[in-house]
Image (cartoon, rainbow, N blue to C red; front, side):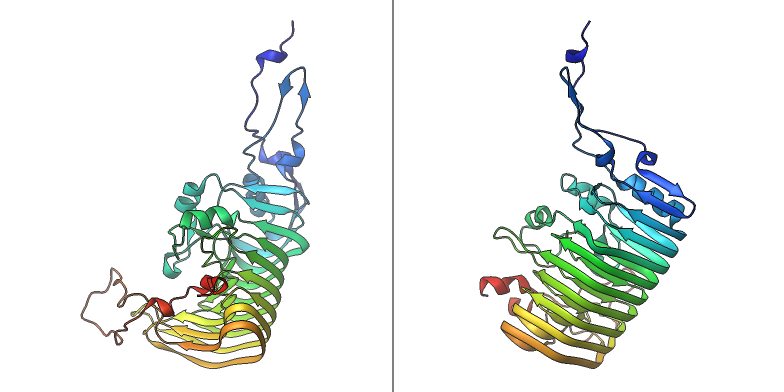
Length: 370
C-alpha cells in the first residue's frame, strides 16, 4: 500500500533546540534550524518550513555559556520570532557569522512582548547586559529587522507604541560590539542605557523606507544615562538621528562616522521630562561626514532643566545639508508633558514653550525637500 498521498504538507517544522546547539566545555556553537531541516519530496510527501524559530537554541546558548564562555552563531540564517533578554552575562565572547532575521508576520507579538527601556516609553527586542562582553560580527553578521513592515505599520507616526529597538546595551559594563551590519531595523538600530565603558566600532547601518512613508526614528544609536562611550568607523543611512547623545551621558567620543539622510551628530533631545534634569558633558564628535541631511551638528532640547557642557564638533564635512549648525531649544509639539504618577502640580516647571512642527525631530523629511 502506498501512503504517500495520505500525509499532509507540513507548514511548520519544530525541532528541539539541542538539534542546533552543541556545547563543548564552556563553548556553545549554534547552527540555524533551517540548516538542519532538509526539504524533501518523495512519492508526494513534501516537508517544508514556514515558521522556523531559532530563538530557543540561541537563548539556551546564552544560558549555558553566557558566563566565562564563548557563544558562536555559525553561518546561515537565523529566524528570530521571540524577544531575547540576555542581561546576566559575564566574561563572554559572542561571535556571530550568520544573518539574524526578525519576523514580520507577528508584529502584535513584538508590540506586546518587547522589553521596556524606560526612556520615552520605548521598548527593545533584544537586551544584552552584564560585564566584560564582546560581540563580534567579523564583517559577516547581518541583523535584518524587517523594518519596512514597521514603517508601514507606523504610517508616519513618530513613536508607535511597542515598535522595538533592534539591540539595547542595558546595564552593561566593559562592552565591545564590532563588525555588524544592520539592514532595515525595526526602530532605532542600537540603544545604550545605564551602561559604562562601551565601545562600538565598524558598524554599518541602513534603514530607509522603500515607499513614501516616513522612516523617522530609525536612529543609528542613542545613549542615555551612560558614560565612557567610544564609537568609531560607522556608516549610517537612516531616516533620523545618526548618533544621538541623550540625557545624562558623559565622556562620549565619536569619530570617523559617515551619516546620510539623517540628523547626523546630535546632542539630545534632552529636557523632555520636567521632573528629571538632563546633563550632557564631555562629548567629542570628530571626522564626521554628513550628506543629504537635515543637520550636521545639532543640539536639541525641550524647555526642561539641566545643561550641555564641553561639547566639541571637530572636522565635520557636509554636503547638501539644510542647517549645518543648529541649536534648537524647543522641539516639542506640546508642553508641559504628562505628569508622572508620583507628581502632581504645583511644582517647579520650566517656562512654557510654543512649539511648532518646524522644530520637530522629523529628519526624514529632509530627503523630500521639507
